[in-house]
Length: 208
Image (cartoon, rainbow, N blue to C red; front, side):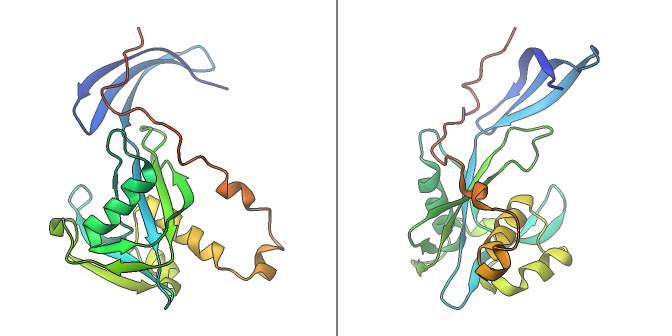
């Protein structure tokens, strides 16, 4: 039951997002004016070290007036490969330069109202290069034991959807093969294309 889009037009546009109204026909024939947000993709990384700790930032989100741990993540610049954006965001937000990155997963945390997509990568090491370039992004930067992630999710100390998905995915990766081999086939989790191109705000024509 696919919804049909008859028109879509922008009502507000800036370098960060494009707020739109779409004339959508539901499967039963009714039409609704559906609000949506189109935005540039994001990129970040789950970075761990030899002591099985993960690099996280503790920050306040004014929109929800809440504190929480998050992986470093930010917007992909126009023409920038997502993997390069992930490395840049880690270094800017934490002061640590990640080791070689590999794709982990892609997440659309709000696909009911936004096409925002976050590419998340993995690194098994990092080198400290100095203080964060953007100190206003986080109250503090810490290496947090990966084993505590489930508890931090349960207590509400990690509420960011992308961070939760990426960190729990990383925990699944580290389960013993004897455990994962008894469950469903998980190889599909790695079958996304991190080089896929997503339009940035300003590149999206009105559909009339």
